[in-house]
Amino acid sequence: MAIDFTLTPMQKELQKAANNFCQNILKPIVKPCDAEPDPQKGFALSKEVYMKAYEMGFCFGFIPPEYGGMGAGS
Image (cartoon, rainbow, N blue to C red):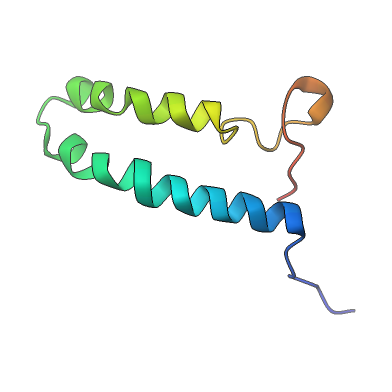
């Protein structure tokens, strides 16, 4: 039996949102965080990115909907 790797419409929207997040929110902060010699300060620079990821639901995508997640499959 063949495995179908075709994305569902929901998965395609999630993929598009994740790509947009990475290109427009995550990518601009990577170099400044990496350039910061103090790891604690580098992590602090990324706090807004983590907050945005949480707001967009990326932090609990695999959690079942009944527990507040998106119920996304792997």
